[in-house]
Picture 1 (cartoon, rainbow, N blue to C red):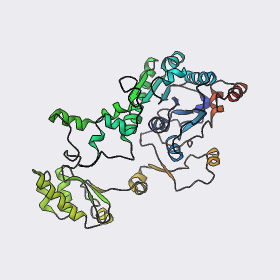
Picture 2 (picture 1 turned 120 degrees about the vertical axis):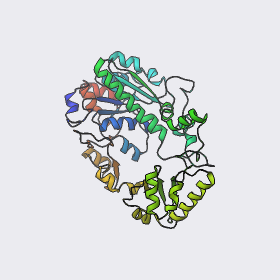
Picture 3 (picture 1 turned 60 degrees about the vertical axis):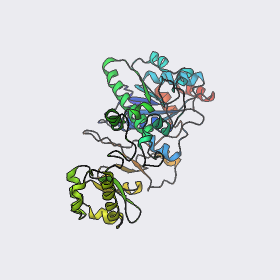
Picture 4 (picture 1 turned 45 degrees about the vertical axis):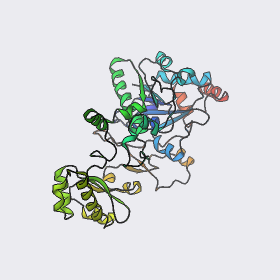
Length: 409
């Protein structure tokens, strides 16, 4: 692993599991930046590398959330000086993550072969929609396209309606961010043993497809996936469904196991429904669902939240995100932090009137011997260019020459 004292001295605390790992993050928008965010939060030194033009054009609020604990460097990879700077940084890096279409990095002169020639132990991760091979490799796409091709979008939503759109992009985050982090960590572990890195080829469509295990079980059993509304988890069972409350909110009834269903029925005073946990006929299921909807729809969500408190029946309110941020469970887990946690003078200069009501999520990985912290906020484009290049061995004169040519920003 990289052991550059000048960078580590201001980097992760001693207990961080990825302390000493240097990551070059060339990604934009969501899947790649979130992958690198997880690595940074676990202690890796992540350098966010953007071009000197548009850079990462994610919305400012999103950019702020997914790029904390990184330093910022701006390079123009269309100039020889920018290419050489990246290759020199690769010599001391453990990981490079990029999210361009297949072939782009090779055309720029910084593909896997060129980088591995400078550093054979580097883990080089490419995140694309459809991967480096296959007939769709060059096709553009977004979250719903990947979910659509993978047969996953078809499993989302309600009967009789188009597949549901979500403000939590499952393909981008599960198929892209998390799958890439898994591949990087596996390759990084092997590189620490063998001294040889790998090219990790992550297709977002592959990643979301590989997690469609419940629909695949249905295909293997019945020859086809269940339509939305016909499986246990999509509405076939009244014991696993969303019910509207009197104030237009929702109660999540997830009493799949009989003991939870019995406890729920007892708490709501409908012991007669206990025997109908898994109704034998559709008409029976519709009757149970109608009975529950009438009962639940008679009271507001707050009433039900109080009524079911400590009921031990897997029935909970459906909170809005702004409500979840204040939930005592997440407070106890320290999962919600003020946005200015870890802020520095440079961040204050970027946002001179910070709104302390703005918040961010903490790292969701808890482990012994490591206390997550926000070491620094998301960098401005190129904020640490000079520092990073100086650590890579560039003199002040060389950096100025690169700046004058527009190779760095």
